[in-house]
Length: 319
Image (cartoon, rainbow, N blue to C red; front, top):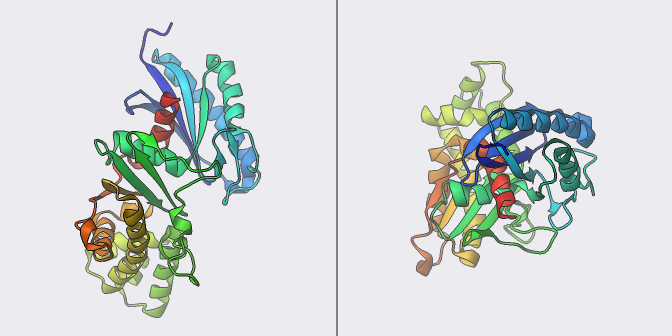
């Protein structure tokens, strides 16, 4: 017996980001270990780092008298939840059909004994985290969407994730906003904004974004937008509003279909902060049919870097 609190491990596996948090049943983070990983090393390289990370997390928990009772994994790509198997990764090779839940269970079994391990898509994990312990807390129907290297989404109803068929659900980033057009990720994912920033600087070397780029050696990207927006740069505002407008268009479809109590925006693009939230919220409103106005409040995610591991751990608690 540990004599201390019980906890679950929440594991986040992305293309370059790997972290494991020790999370209590209410979603509070009691500790964490994190590493950057090289996607060039493939899935095998990431698993090698993860094996060491799990050992460190368990040792930290044990040293603090915390008992690990379950583990949840939030994976950056499609998963087969029922089998605990990764379907594929769009960013890192070698994950296809890998039995990740069983692999983690084996390694944790040697450290803490047999415990349940569940596998979730990272967007679904983040949705559960924000719904139960973040910006959606207290709402019955929570729609979460993250924009970063891709665009994902999830839906929580009465504290439980909405489930579609085993191959997935709520792939907002793959909506085609016109029959012959591209998908939402092509206009509103982080890499799409990066491209727009580079184009703007090349077209107008005197714009505010170019001045931000001249301050350091960092390659031009969407990271320059917050400072340029704060300085009142019209080019930065046009880039933001265009991307937010496409995003709002997609979310308006989701509102008409689901009519959630709240929309929560996360991911790297949401790190732009209030200008992003305000632009998305403002542009959704004009796209809604009159009975749906005013639309649901649009909020920025509250859990920050912890959103996926907290959600994965809460999913494990509920398993």
